[in-house]
Length: 272
Image 1 (cartoon, rainbow, N blue to C red):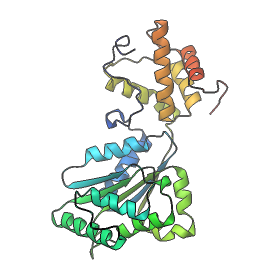
Image 2 (image 1 turned 90 degrees about the vertical axis):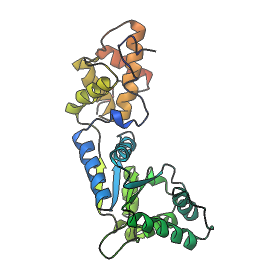
Image 3 (image 1 turned 180 degrees about the horizontal axis):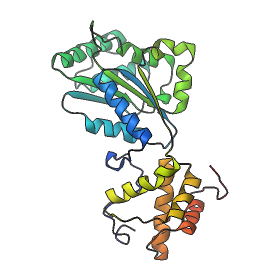
Image 4 (image 1 turned 180 degrees about the vertical axis):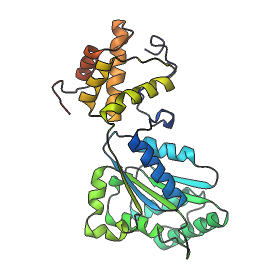
């Protein structure tokens, strides 16, 4: 709708986790580097972050950075019983599911993982929204996958991605056996105030425009409302572009940000 008016080829603040739009803040760069290290070393990593901070986009960027020597098994909805979880992994190997017995499923997974090892392929299991894993039993099956080891190395990499509550949950003694297997931890926080302008410039450039559409005062207001959370920035920026388009304004200024904030339900008095 507003793309032609602002000389944009794409919507710059889409909600989809497109890795092309990933802005490498210090935290996001470090998070991606740690996940890549976990894959290289076949480690288990726990990546946490607040809602809307770009965790899913980071996993997509990780996937894009891998090659044919990696087999990615992506689990987007982990609300699974232990058997359902194991069946999901087996299905990603495109083999016939032997039975619903967990031992048979685990044996099948181990056989395929070992075949990958012999072929020089690293399986990378990514569990997004892992805070939704329903119970201890499913986490126990996840832990058992880390037992796929040789004398000198692991045979797969496992990446748990979730909200901060996941880390609190794993701190409970019930989950100590799994937590002890986690080799890397990283938490992705909001963007710093001095990163907001770079974030918005990056997304606008990827969308096809080189000059900035938002004034400095608009960007400062954007940080005040969003607290640096990318998803909120995207929602507000989209609302602001629509508002500016409707008003025939070529540049988004602070009053338009206030109007956009009201439109998306942000408290104008909010102070982060």
